[in-house]
Each structure stands twice: as structure tokens, then as C-alpha cells.
Length: 77
Image (tube, rainbow, N blue to C red; front, side, top):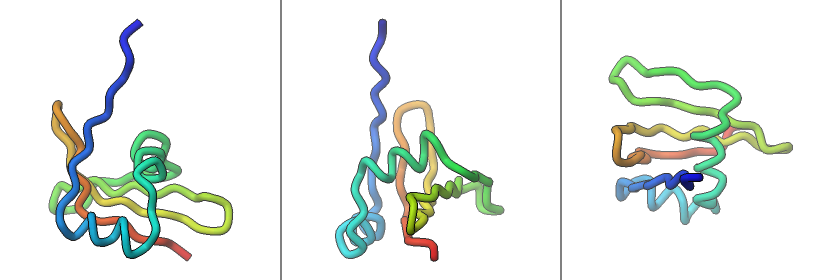
């Protein structure tokens, strides 16, 4: 059985979002792999949303066959 490996890269802006807003990389992975809702923005970026009980998280990213590039992430009310 082959283990799935998700390679993630972060833009500088996404790194700031991660640390200043107390997001974990695990939460971001969950949003990307098991979103409640996903759509493709007009600029081609992927936007995924996930509810975590009392808050939601939205992650904006791009992907190719080698990695996911996280552009930004933010809390939803």
C-alpha cells in the first residue's frame, strides 16, 4: 500500500496568515482534502471552505502534480 504524501508550499502572505491567525497546517490540509465547499475563482485559484464547529476556515490555493501552493487562509464567521 502506497502512503499518500501531500506536499504543501506557502506564499509569504500565507505564512503570515498561518501564524497570526493561529491556523494549523493540519487544519489547512483538512480544508483542502475534505472541504465542505470548493470552487474555482476567475483567476484559476481554488477556494475551499470547511466548518470546524464554532468557526470556518477558507483556504485559497493552487495545485499541480507535485504540490499545493497556499496563497492565503482566513476565518469565516
